[in-house]
Length: 99
Image 1 (tube, rainbow, N blue to C red):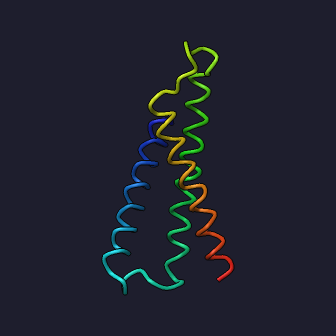
Image 2: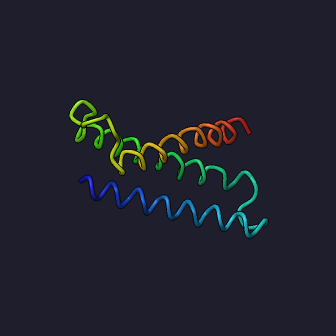
Image 3: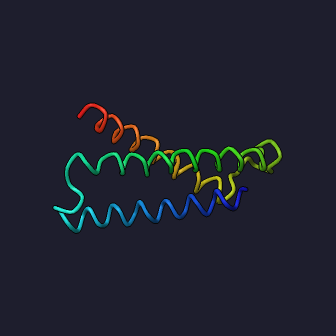
């Protein structure tokens, strides 16, 4: 289950990256209000998946059991993805909702 969620996270991150690259390369392709829900949906999926994987990683490696309280590599990666997409998702969702 964990590997499936991890693969889905990286697949969604790749799709989101391609989506942003396509919107940057072509002004007419992805502009307008019609495409904002797709961006918000992709960001929402990234927030949920990275949050679930981060919680799982925290449960597998509690900080009390580590020597100096250091984080593992996946902990750092999932927390960065979660933090960045959480705030960008909030911004894009509110922009889509109130437009």
